[in-house]
Length: 627
Ligand code: ADP
Image 1 (cartoon, protein in one colour):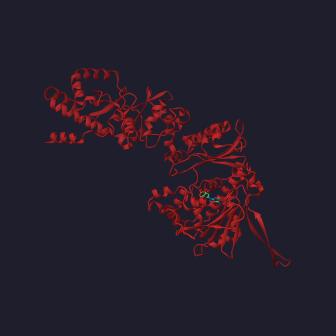
Image 2 (cartoon, helix red, strand yellow):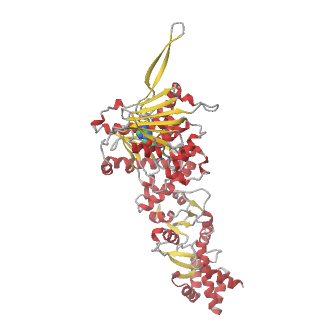
Image 3 (cartoon, helix red, strand yellow):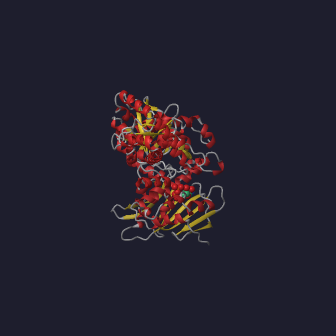
């Protein structure tokens, strides 16, 4: 028989499992039972439309067998089983194994994180077993196969003898050590209490053999009576009464069902009647899944029809901006043999999705109002998605999302909602001001922000690339328009100031014209600034495309050969000493003014975080001035 190697990443994970000092080793049982239950779900679902399955609801079960003589624990199910190929694919590699490759060994240090993050299911068996044997026969196949592995050295797959469809996992437990008594997992009370603790709501019976010691009248033990007993209560959690359930119940259900080690940030348990009748159990994760912002991430909720799982991930139940939600929906209104394609057009699914969307929004709003700290933590995990949501829908979802947004602002270190910003607006303030940049520190240093702040206006700080795009789609909030501090028409001056700058502009018209000619089509205009306080120069933008949007769009690989250009103006600070110098040069030394103009333009670009076209020229000009 041929020994096969695990895929590299699987091997590393396996290694972690085998040498795990993880304190919750007992979860292996929960993982294996869940796999068994999923496999039964699949076959039960099939049996409803395919008579050849030949099984009724009551026939399905999970059996746990402890053999103290052989030191083995067996978990047996009569679910769908695995073909040889599935054995190879499912147990020789980890589904998302690639992701492990991203992690350095250092990051792998915290094993509990690994165990949580990857939902390592089956592999957790190696935390307690020195050898694992999987014997399985797939529905519809006439051959059975045995997969065997004693750890990192690899595994074998061979044909074997197995009459019934289904899977049995045989764990040969590790030897007891001083610290760890693996043999306890063969104890019937231990098994019962673990099943109660983690798998009580599993919808199929979990059975095990229990022993009853009988005694005679004098209290002496007589015979031992054995019987197979169902040890879980089998009522699905979401069908239970909310008042009977504790946070622990929800948390362990979540951990089990979704393989997330971290307890959820919040859960929502609702029963809805009316246009759509359903039970839903939803969870908001407390950590961002490692692949959340990648294209591999699949959103969706498990879909049940009257207790039968009909789909593992029904994406139509969740809008993209709530794609982080995990959970399930159970509805009587759905037909069992509905196909994926039909589902998309199913009126019932749409109705459920609409109602769920409101429910999720309400839950988040509640969190925002009642537990700001938790909401901010949540927002740092998933808030980006809301901004994409607004942008991608061209604003169609603005009303659902606009009050869930948070931004940094000049008001304080804490993030603010738009509602809070508006409530702080000065009398007569028409606009919601914002500034863009790579970081808060950088934005705070932007010359354009100085005067706006000085006049007592709060500025929102946009540090995500999508921010300005989203806000452009939002257009306004509560009737207040969004305005970039770099926009050409900031309109911050008093009447007198306007008069004054008009005069100054008039008197320097020719110089501005000269400077504009020096810069050519790099700028649309050179003009006197109404926004600068202490800085000598800045850029401002006219029109719909801002400089920051230009930066973002031009950095996208798909735009490599169709670069966009924002309409820029070079603005000069009329009360800066350099301005007087420029005026003098215009009269006496036009060559020098040409240099100064180029220098000032380069400076403005640098301040803005835009790379300059010719750094060598800039460097040479500076040297010229220095010598
Ligand atoms: P997950 O359950 O998160 O997908 P696992 O490592 O626990 O990851 O299992 C990998 C795959 O192996 C499962 O998705 C399933 O297809 C298959 N599998 C595991 N246990 C069983 C079982 N008892 N019966 C049928 N298939 C199983």
